[in-house]
Image (cartoon, rainbow, N blue to C red; front, side):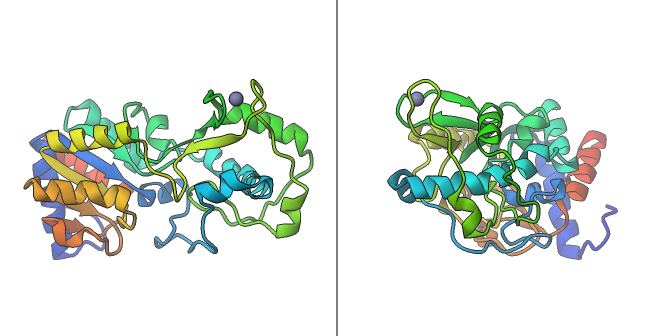
Length: 284
Ligand SMILES: [Zn+2]
């Protein structure tokens, strides 16, 4: 194994990862740490910036025009960074392992769409995806790119280049900038548009959760990639796997809430780990 900075514990974790992948049937659960090498900052990773302020809740968003204006203004800037990000070596290695049959399924907590962009179109987006927008009245789903064009027209000249971006596509903006932002309604019914992502204070749709439990139930092993498992919506799958005696391996730079449930931990950069692991599985 030739990854710089690997400790004895990392080497043991990598060996476990290769062994489990070689046996096939692995389910991947990915988080923000997988996308940092694509230039999308983690909330708390090494390259990341801690989020300032708390994310908007579903109740705030649906509760007032002012809140929605704030959300869309910040997201209008943040979306630029998400839209131009490309999948990195980690996403590509996961897709390679899926195509070779070593990875059975991918569940992601990320809303950036990078697994899909890497070709993993079956990835279950637990918290939804920023590239879609949903109307809260008629439930019509449309593309974010289409909405972006309309917002761009309504807000010609609106720019904030130095904004700090969060992985949910939210950008830090001066409050004054937000006040003059114009939001766009549903083009069909005039209803309120919301990004097709699960907000804080909102539940992941039950059928989607059920689908994930089924995938974890069928898994030979669960591999967590780049998540500190801070939110219960991801942690519950790790707990579920551990309770069933399904081995769990966590690859994350930093402690996670699932560390005690894992049979092995690897604390190395994901792009390097996954590229090396995919190579070793191929030659195993
Ligand atoms: Zn509508």
